[in-house]
Image (cartoon, rainbow, N blue to C red; front, side, top):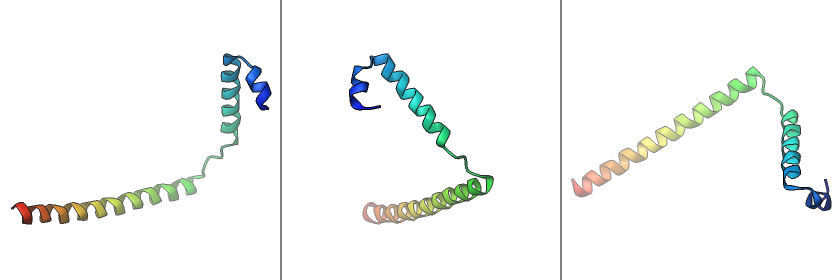
Length: 71
């Protein structure tokens, strides 16, 4: 729709148009295969483990530093 037609629509007509457009976009979405889903799952889990290890090391370092300073 062009901008002029959108301005002439009532509030509720614009809401209905919005939801129609959302549904049209949902129809374009492609669901991943089981193989793709498995790869994405492993990628997320791997990333989380790496971040957890990094944060854990920082926690130990800063904890020891605080203990050494105020200990």
